[in-house]
Image (cartoon, rainbow, N blue to C red; front, top):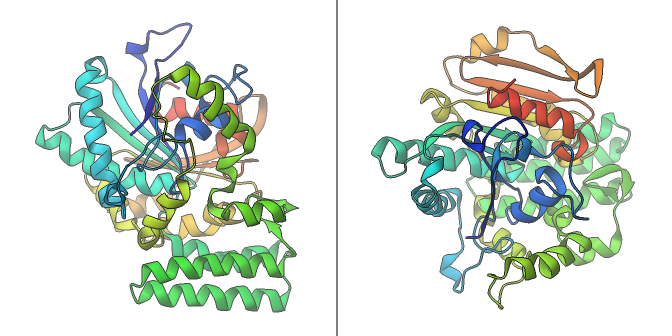
Length: 394
């Protein structure tokens, strides 16, 4: 498993006085050391220019390419690939055990796991196993909380809301809505019958039905249509993670600079294998895992973008995400639901609302305005402020 650590680079604080954040990308098969690092929160963008809103100014940041087969992480035999989040979490615990043993300076520093998309599902499972490992004394670290961004916690809730969302944004007519709804119902039936690999196949069918009925809406930006060539070459669920310029950067200058990547490993080239091996787990919900984390007293944050820029994840934001939150069995849920949200000013425009949030006991929910799925890319200053609030620096 390949990981990349940046020590916090703050003009006013030593890294020992700032938290450690681990970033997990989505997919499964998206590379955190590539995409999260150079496209979202690392100190440099993919043109190797400084990023003003880098999280490294407020925390040490650990990017991990997981599960194996993602980015520069690799396996030389099929049995090495993860097939579900339990195996994935077990692999990550091996890495964390070694990391905190070898980097003992981080054992007492507050450690947070931040995530995006399918990374949220992984983060929830990893957080639960990490909590158990700390209690057993097998991992030495100061785990302070997990943040789930636009997360794939309850996949069915998301799929079932695609049709109504596209209909309300005038991207489907009545006939199209009926087509998408029928396809989504097939997914629902497979999930209810615990046929999760079939559900993943049918999920892909729903996407095709959506594209056919919307004249090729782009799943990552509803303001533009899909690129047919990209659609043929790259599967929809990893398209944004494999821009040619980022691939050239990672397999060119970065690979050369690192000097440790095996010759048989190509960055990003194995992402499709990762998804294929995880296909039976992709549509399986982990709402119960979030419940266990909250009940165990772990600080859990859910954060989502508001902008209708991304079909799948916009749906996650406004309906799918809130649906599964309302079904939590956590005893504090009723108190959380009674709260009104609190507005936050946009850091770049005082007096202009940039987000809303509410928090109750160990559960917090952020709505980041004017942001799509990749919140740090769309609203970097607001995402950085959220990071500081979650890690109790603001």
